[in-house]
Image 1 (cartoon, helix red, strand yellow):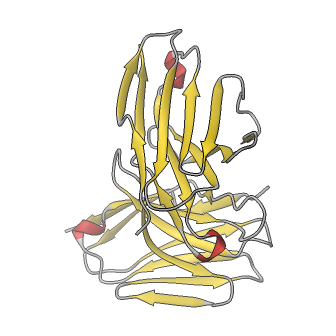
Image 2 (tube, one colour):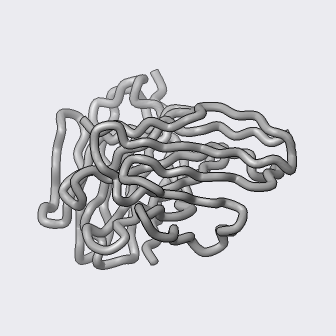
Length: 116
Length: 113
């Protein structure tokens, strides 16, 4: 089945620094990747939709200059949290859909970000 | 955009009894409705899904029903077992356009022995 590899699984960074999270589709081409954030005991909130070769589409209230998304190839999308603050500490997870509308969504394993 | 409402937020049932979780959605163009089970700190795990061309789907102890007219769908778990205890999320998406998957708020299900 489809696999999305997400790294790192955990990261601790200092306030003011930037952190990059990678998601790779291992055995399929992901023209679209979705990025979610999940705070403790809450739901997965869609942050942005990443499209290969074009600009990402951000959901309302998500700062595009703070959460930089790059989707340079059909198998790799990255999310960079810039100038991280403690309130950015969260579980970030990506998702892609193999085969378009006929398939379900494949999730990465998630990244636990802690900003100290 | 799509908005998915999920109820209840917490549900506690006796082992062996049935559990029902309900969701409503706002976008009439949504036509794919998956249900996920999520363990703490893990990725969501698909347990069942339904597309808008059917009204019900069953997989052993798990079933999902869809009412397109009312824009709601439900998860039914029968003969519940302790290992069913988890957080469950419903979601909805379209098969056209952005195909964004929007999640409900989640239900923490506890099965009491």
